Every structure is written in structure tokens, then in C-alpha cells.
Length: 147
Length: 147
Length: 147
Length: 147
Image (tube, rainbow over all chains, first blue to last red):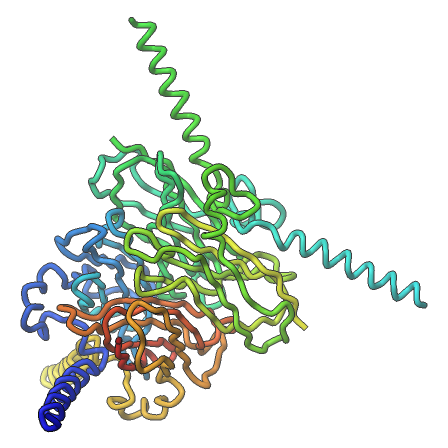
């Protein structure tokens, strides 16, 4: 009985350690990207990966429009895209990224389709991360050259 | 001397009370609107009042674009439009408003010119409040009918 | 019949105008405060007015804790406190307020009870505005002296 | 001359491709963690990794305090901690994480030291990501058991 209890205890510990290990992944591993999605997540790639529409090349210091869309995706109190964040990986900057914006999207009223006017002085990569209340964080990215 | 000190003390108290009274206005009184701006603020009405571009009439449940712009306004680390919030006063709702979104605008990179896709089921008034780090909160509003 | 139709049309117009007038109030009028709440809102004053706990007097440049609480209030997907914003009306500043923070509170997981460390160089009034998804915006305020 | 120009062109292309490759890393790779920081970032680990103070074990559905601190770190308009986000990796949830909160911190006024009251029904890992305007995104994490 002592041994059985001890064995059970060991099993629980091992299971917990396995979970803890997976659970303690760096945060970045929790963000889904099309090339890294696996298992269940593969079926969500198309409906959750944010699309970035912006020029390939822009002029330094001149505003240009960036559009971020997600979906088609449901927009209900139970399931919707709740947030879109935008960051910039700026060429030759010692540390990256630069936080550009976070946009809250209230269910039912706000569609995951936003347009911002950005201004770059150096080229880099626009990253956007969207949050779905059921399916987590998904990223999109687009390189932009500055002339 | 005793009287003089006491008089000074009274003056300070009176000044403080006057300031406190003004300072303790309801928060809503701190939000500038074109029709309520006075004194120094009048010169800021044109550069700070957010403009809302949206249809006068929309179809229930069908997304439409709302554009919010501010300015022309500087966009520097020292002085820029830092945030835009959007609310809805919805017809026949017992309590209003409904919070729709808050958008952070990082200086230099983000212009105060955003477009969102909203969906209404009832008519009402779109309110937008922008924040300038030097000149405070300014509002704009636009009624929208739903058919 | 023509007259009747016309009368009905007039009635609708008048009702719409009445609604539009009320609906087009400055945004500040939509923020509930204990002294301005009326009608239905009176029953919500106790459960919705944010309470600010902070020292009456602080030292310039030295961090101090500000606690904002709302409630007791439900915390469900259907009804909860969703956001808390904090602003400062700073003494002798030409334009006010200063935006200090906006905190998102996700239903079920986040209670409307937050503590921030602020640092003031001049006295003023801390304003906090909370948003309840059913009952709108409610404010609290507290004057703080700086020595 | 033609060959030289072509060689230069090739060098530029190669440099650009190298940069693009690095630049197009998944977003998660841009978030610094103590165990992954390398090069220049190593010297920033201590001043930038957010610390989470919370109980190791909590009771299901009962609020508990989570404190997030960063630093000691400068708090100026030029260099400060601008945002703190909190997410939950929840045990046995099909997709993770759950977004819990995003807190804006305005330079000079707001210290990177916040306390929230959270409520969990299942165990998991609290992740926090802070943003420094000069040194990017840094994460901290802490497992919490629920009984």
C-alpha cells in the first residue's frame, strides 16, 4: 500500500512535471504563426492569421496606410477577435521591436478590419499580433523598404 | 505680525479653496468640445477637435467604415496625439455609452488618422475622444441612423 | 388622411429631434458621478462609483500607491467592470488632464481592484473613470497635495 | 565597370537577404527572456525582466494579488517602461494563452510596479510581458496551482 501510494505519487509528479515543462515555454512559443502551427491549430491558420496590406516600399517620413484584417471570423460575445497590436522591427536599431499601437475590439460592434497611418524613417518589418478569445495569439508580418 | 501671518494664511486658504473647487469639477467638464472651449482653449479647437467621417445612415448589422482624424497636428515625442477612444450612445439603451475601442498612437510613427469597421444594430451617436499630451482631451460626435 | 399622415410624420420628427438633442449631449455629460446621477442611475451609484485610496499629501517625486476599487460588483462575461482609466488634473498646468493609465479588465479573471505606483511633482486631482459593460462610465476623484 | 556594378549589386542583395531573414523571425523570437537573451541584451536582463509576485497555490475562484515589478529602471520621457501585459496559459485549455490585461504606463508619472487581483478556476502559468521604449519586450512567468 505504501508502495502503491508512492507509485501514484510519482505518476502525478511526472505528469505535473511534463505539464509544467510544456507550460513554462517562453511566451513567444505561444504565439501562433502559419509556419509553426501544428495539431489542432492548423485548422485555424486561415481564419486567424492577420493579413497586412501595405506598400512594399515607402518614402521616409511620409505617412502611408496599413490595413490589418482577420477572417472571415465570427464576431459574437462568445467568440471574436478582441485585440490587434502592431510592432515594428526597425533596421539597425540596437533593440527591437518598437511598439506602435494596441487596438481594442469590442465584440459585435467592432470588426477585425482596421487601418492606421504610419510613418517610417527606416525600413523594417511590421508585425501584427491579434488575439481571439478562444484561439489565442496569431501573428502576421510584412517587410517594408524605406527610400 | 500675528494678524499679518493670519491674513496670509487666510489668503492661501482662500486661494487653495478656489483652486480645489475648480479642480474638483466633474471629469466631464475637463473634456473640451468646440462649443464649450473658452480662453486659451479656443485657439486649439481647430487643431484638436477630432473629425468623424461616417455615413449618416447605415444598415443594421452591416459593417461600415468610420474614420477619425485630428489635425493638422504635430507628431513628435514632445507633442502628439497619443490616444483615440470611440464610444457609442445607443438609442433606447438604459445606460450609455458603450465602449467600442481605444487606440494607442505612438509619437512619430502613428498619425492621428484611423479607420475602423463598425456594425450597429440600433442608431445612436458615435463619440470620439482624443488625447493630446499637451492639450488634454477633445471630443467629436456624429449621429448615425440605422435602417 | 393626408393631415393624419402629416401629423404622424410631425410627431416622429419631434420625437427624433428630442432624442437627437439629448443624444448629442457633450460626452462629459455621459459620465456618471454620484452628485449628478439621476433616475435609474441612482441605484447604481454605490456599486459603480470607483473608490480611490491614496495619501492626502505626498512628497514630490516620491512614488506612492494609488488603489482603485469598484463594487462589490458582478464579474461575469455578461456583466463586469471592463476598464479603469486614471487621469491627473495637475495644478497650474495650462491644459488638463494628463492621461496616466488605462487598464483592461477581462471578465471572470480580473477583479476591479488595482494598485498603481504614481509619482507627482505638483499637486492636483486624481480622476478615475471605470467602464461597466451594462452601466456605462462612472467617475471618482481625490485631491492630493504635494510637498 | 559593368562587373563591378554587378558585384556591388550582389553584395547589397546578399546583405539585404541576410537582414530580411533575421528580420523576418517569428514575433516570439523578438521577446527577450533571461534564458534566451544574448549579446547586448545580456546586460539588460536584470533591469528589464519583469518579476511576478504571487502565491504558488491559490483557491479556485478566490481573488489573489499579483504584483508585477520591473527594475530598478529609469522613468523619463526618453526611457521608461511603457506597458505591462498579463496573459494566462491555462491548464487543459485547447488554445492558449488567455489575455488578462494590458496596462499603459505614462513616463515620469507611472512606475513599473502594479498590483492586480486575479481569479483562477484552473491552474496554469502567468506570463507578463513588459515593453521598454528603448530595449523592447521582456517576459517573466510563474506557475500557479489551483486547489
